Image 1 (cartoon, helix red, strand yellow):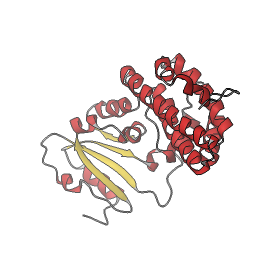
Image 2 (cartoon, rainbow, N blue to C red):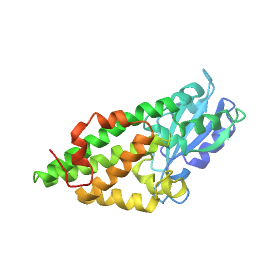
Image 3 (cartoon, rainbow, N blue to C red):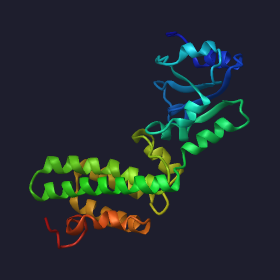
Length: 246
């Protein structure tokens, strides 16, 4: 642990180490306008396989100013899951592989079509499940449960919408930043953000149903009709209209 290591000192060490192949900056400092005086710098140092680098000792370094992870090119390429969005919007500070590091980062921001289709089906089902529970709980007078389920549904909805666009969902902190710069096709950013904010805060049933109707149209157009149809008559409870069966 080197508690006083600064970002500038790290850059100097990286620049003089031939084993280093790349340095990638992620987090608030990689998102224009989001860094504050409280924001640390999160970096990946990418080293050659089996390289002898003194920087390897910095792997896992954490301080108020700097978080460091040291990895190889192959391990960096395999990173995914929750880390995928962070890397998709990361900045390439050093790339000594003639653009290979940049290509890896760019690939994080685009889901494979088959991968996206399979994932979207799961998110569609999860969104419908939470929305159904919310509407049913509101109908039965369980208002806290209804609001909690509504809030849960928004997370699944965002996963669905970004997956349909073959993009990783941004962390909540970066959602507005992302949508203001890279809107979801077919969705007006301001309206979408206002709608999900109201649903998460109030669990408004009518608003949930109206949003679901829009999502259902989008999902069916993307080929997810079978996932929706598996809900059978329960869809009637989720849709706008007078026929809201249990």
